[in-house]
Image (cartoon, rainbow, N blue to C red; front, side):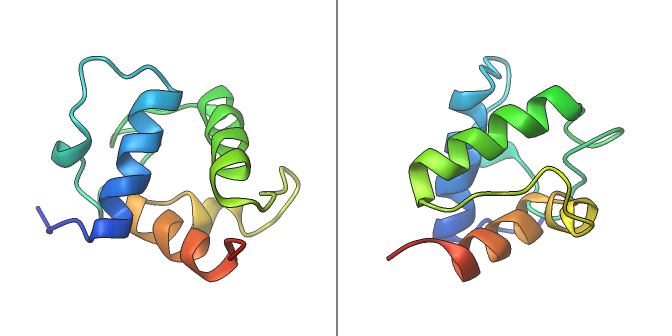
Length: 89
């Protein structure tokens, strides 16, 4: 498992809190593991809830119709990179 960066850890905590993943520790999420399917096991409803939480926390919208979503939501690391590149200052 890779080490989480501080930004990845912050996002992992937001993920755990916003999706009520009581059995998951934010620090235990592998930043390179898939968020959906065989990885963390999230589904499309989780993606919508996570997108809303990111919007509130970081001040930008993740569009549900974006063709980039599969890449953006591939892992904690890719999501964190996208948030870092797009968050409002």
